[in-house]
Image (cartoon, rainbow over all chains, first blue to last red; front, side):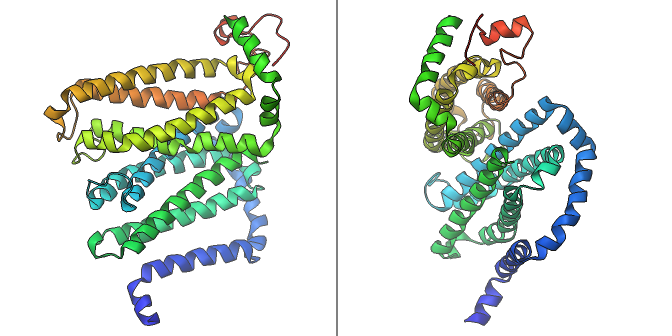
Length: 194
Length: 189
C-alpha cells in the first residue's frame, strides 16, 4: 500500500515534504537562527528604487496597492471559476478541462500582477513587515499556494478528469480555494498590523 | 445639499452603533476585509465575463453561457460588497461623505450600473448571431472595455479613500474642497 502511494503520488509527496520542511524551518527554531540575518536584506530593500518611491511617494504606493487588488480579483475569479467547476457549482454545462485550462493563463497573469506589485509594496515598508508575524504567514501561504497550484493541481488536472477519483478532485478544489483565501486574508491583515 | 449630507452624516455618526462599529478593532477590520476579499468573487467573475467578450478568456465557450452562469456568483459577491460598503460608510460617515475619492467612486458606480444595463440589453438583443464567436461585436466589446475601466477606477478610488491627502481639514485647495463637499464651520470630522 505504502509502495503504491509512493509511486502514484511522487509529486504530491515531494510538495508535502517541502511544505513540512518550510513549516519546521519556520517554527522549529531554524527560523530564529536565520531571522536576524534577514534584517539586512529588508533594510536594503528599502534603499532600492522601489523602496524609495514607495516610501516617499504615497500616491504611487496607494495606486500599486489598488493594482494589487485588481490582480487579486483576477486571480480569485479564475480560482473560483475553475474550482467551482470542479465542485460542480458553476459552469456545469462547460467541460471541466475547458474551464480549468482556459482560466489557467489568466490565473498566471493575475498572479504575476500580484507578485510584481507585492514586491514593490514590500520594498516600501520592508522594515515594518519584517517584524510582522502575519507577513511571514502570508509568505508561507503564498509558497504553499504556488506549490499546490503548479505542482499538484495543474499536473493532476492535466489527466483525463473522468479517470480521477471524484473525491480527490473535489478535495483539490476545496484545498485550492482555501489556500488562496488564506493568501488573500493574511495579505489583508498585514494592513491592519504594525 | 452639502450641508444636508453633512448633517445626515453627523446624525449617523452620533448613533451608538456607528461608534461601536468604528471603535471595534476586530469588527471594523472584519467588515473591511470582507469588503475587500469579496472582490475575488464579484470583480473576479465580472472580469472573466468582460474578458470573454474581448476574446481573451474562454473564447471557445459560448458568450451567453459564460455571462449567464457567472452572473449569479457575481451578483452574490456584489450584494456582500454592497452591504459591507454601507457598514463601512456607517462606521465613518462624516469623513467618508466628504471624501473626494468616495464621491468619484459613487459617480463611477452609477456609471457602472448604467453600462451593465446597456451591456446586457445589447447582448440579449444580438447574442444569437455571435454567441460562439471568439470575440463579441464592437459595441459589446466597448461595453466590456468600459466595464473593466470603470471598475478598475472604482477599486483605485476605494483604496484612495483610506488616505487623507484631500481631507477637508488638510486640503487648502478650494476646488477640491468644493468637490469634496466640505462645509464651512463644520465641527465634526
